[in-house]
Amino acid sequence: VAKMNLKDGADAFTVQPQHSRTVNGIEGIEILTDATVDGLRLSYAHWVTVQKGFLYQLVLWSDQSNHAHLTDAVKELLPGFYLLDSTRVAEISSEHLPSHRSETYGYRVNLDPQHWRIDEALQRELPGISFAAGSAGKASMIIIPIWLHGEEISSDVINAALLSRMDFEISSHEIVSINRLPDPKLSGSAIKAKRRLDGESYDYQMRVIEREGFAYLLVAWKLSSADDWPTSRLETALSEIEFDRNVKPPVQLSFDEEVSHALFFNDAGLQLYSASEFERCAKFFKRAFEFQYNDKAMLTNVIEAYHQLGQDKEALEYLQKYATRFPNDRELLVVRGDSRLGLGDIAADIQTSDTLFSGGYR
Image (cartoon, rainbow, N blue to C red):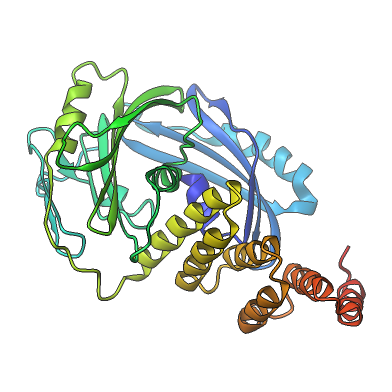
């Protein structure tokens, strides 16, 4: 979640391999990232731990030129973190019974109130979570729905794009199995996974459901050590979600839903880009950017897809159409220069280079 939140707000994002770090007897994960945010090149250090249903996140950051000082600050400041009450367990309000109906996306949830409660805090953790429930730190469940906008998208691409929302990769060793859904009336995949976080192991049951122009990511997970919480209870919860027929496309998406759809189409485009399907990935990148007009990385993806197609003219036209949203952005000036060079406009490319280097670009 920490990585996804930073990725969602960054123009560019690079994460280093995460590793375990124990602070005053508390096991956690340290994550180091470099990101460009509103034109600023920053380095981040996150230390994250989950204890009895509570998530604790310590964040330090600095300019990338001061990366060494950031490392020193992490060593100095982290030892100052303590839990005042290590026995405290997160409790979910008993008022939040686990029932929900989405008119927009046409599904109904009616979980067993003996085991589940609505978890509003979890629902705010990732863009596009339409429903979230939990069980006192032992188990959690979310639903992320996507309207496919009439696009024909293969199941493999849908699976990969939606699983990336949970920071899973299809080829990862964390994925245990991918099978057809057990319910013959539904189309999609049933996915099992295992992951270790903050010194704890978690079991995941996930379903990707495709129906009537929509895709749904259903995820339920539990602490592997919670022997009083059988994995079968996750499967039961996922099976209790019902879907309506003849669901109409949403009239308007909220800002949070637009971010979620932008991430989905961008990730779908990346899958197609890796498969060298540049024409289709350009279409998906454009749809992603048109949900998030202020996301420079998504704009750059569109331009790169056009370049791969040899359509430098279209790339330049599209870039110039939206470049005013990113005034004096050096990286986009480089991209524009490349587009002009591809069209044989050497003079314009030289002029762009002069502008960049006179401004200190290297």
